[in-house]
Amino acid sequence: MRSSLLVSLVLAACTNNQPPPSQTSRVDVVKAPKASPAAAGFCDARFDGASAPRLTLPELAPGTNAPSAPRDRWVWLNVWATWCAPCLRELPLIARWQELLGFDLWLLSLDSDAETLAKFTAGRKELAHATSLRAANPDRLGQWFAANGLAADSSIPIHLLAGPGGVVRCVRMGGLEEERLGAVKAVLGAR
Image (cartoon, rainbow, N blue to C red; front, top):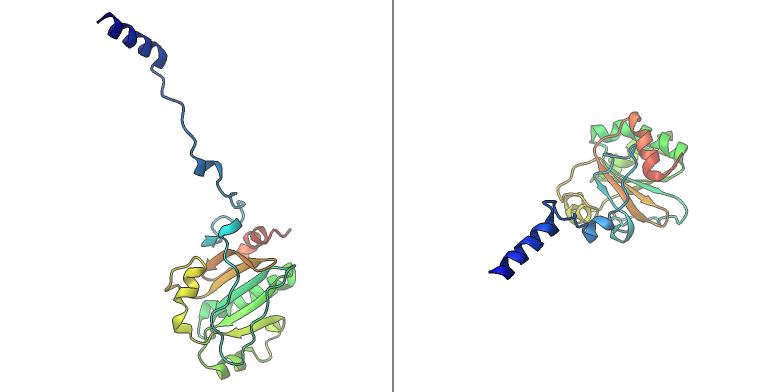
C-alpha cells in the first residue's frame, strides 16, 4: 500500500498538470516549400521535386511533329480548341506573356478537323511564335489529364507550365485574365 502511494505521488509530481510536449511528425518536417503569395491559388496542381511529372504529350494527329522541351526555358502548354470561347479570349494574352517572359508556347488543339484549325491559325500574328499541335483523339485524354494531376474529365482551357528541362511544375484549368500576370511571374520565377 505504501509503495502504491509513493508511486502515485511521484507520478503526480512529474506531470504538473501540463500537457505533454507536442510531437512533430516526420511529414511536417519535410513539407514542400509554400508557393509565393502571388502564385497562391493559381495552380490547380503544383509539383515540386521528385513527384513532378515529365512534360509529355498525348498521341498527336498524323503530320503533327512533337517538339522537345528546351533545357534552358520554360514551356507553357496550352490545351485549347477553336470552339472554346475562353480559349480564344486568352490566346492573345498568353502570346503577350510569351513575348514578355520568354517561355516556349505550345498550343495543343483538341479540334478534330485539321482544316478548321489551319484556317483559324493562318495569319494570326500573335500565334507566329507558338508551336501548333493537334491531339489525335481528344476523347481519350483522360489518362493524360490524370498523369498531370487533373481529373480525367477535365475541361479546357488547361495550362501546363514546365520548367527548364521539361518537368511540369504547375497545371491550371480555366481561362486567364490580365490580373494573373503576377501569379504567372511567381510560378516562372520571373521578375
